[in-house]
Structure formats: structure tokens, C-alpha cells
Image (cartoon, rainbow, N blue to C red):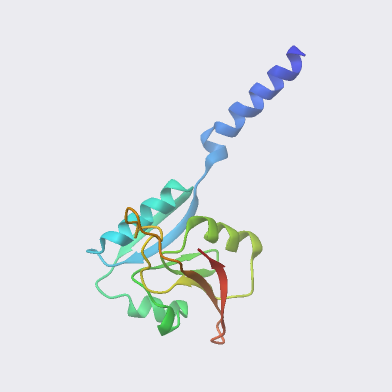
Length: 145
């Protein structure tokens, strides 16, 4: 019995070591003055991502290069694992995308819905969709909140 307890203890310690907790890198492009973008970066950091942030005065070229359709654009654009992440997408949905690996160009939360990560307001939570978009222009709901 003592051997089992010792083995479990070693497993717990191994799981908590820094090597076992390597954060997932994500690149974030935002404007330098956007406070909600900074809050979204904090949300991602708190959920195991390691954001590299680039502040730019204009994100149009980034959004165009990432293939983000105009109707899905928001205030910041990120890239991870070959996908574009547009706007206030929750960290768990980004994890879902990376796990499922769908054949899409990216996912987006269009606009800036209240209650989405980085847009929290006490007492208010708007419903919103996370939309997957393809390089061919197709769009479909990927997740709903």
C-alpha cells in the first residue's frame, strides 16, 4: 500500500513540474490602446496559453492575410496551429479547435459581445456564436455561448 501511495505522490509531483505545464504559444495582433484586447490576452494566459503580443496601429493587413471575412472581424486577430482566431474567442473553444483540427481557416467571435472573454460586465452575459470560416468563404457556427 505504501508503494502505491509513493507512486501516486511521484505522479502528482511530475504533473506539477514546469516541464509538464508548458503553455501553448499563440501570436496576438492588437492595437496598442485596446483595453479589452489586453483583457483577452490575460484570459488566454490564465488558461494555459503563452501569448506573444504585437501592437500595430492598423490590423487590416493582418486580418486580410489571415483570411478573416469582413463580417466576422473584431478588435484583435491571433494565429495558432495554422488557424486564425478573431476576436473574443474563449480559451476552451481554441483548445477544442486545436484538438479537433477541422478543415477551416479559423474561428471568430464577431463584434465584441458583452460577457465574452475580455468583455465581461457584472450582471450581463449576452449570447453569442463562435463562427468557423473557410478559405472559400464558407461560415458555420462552431460553438455557442
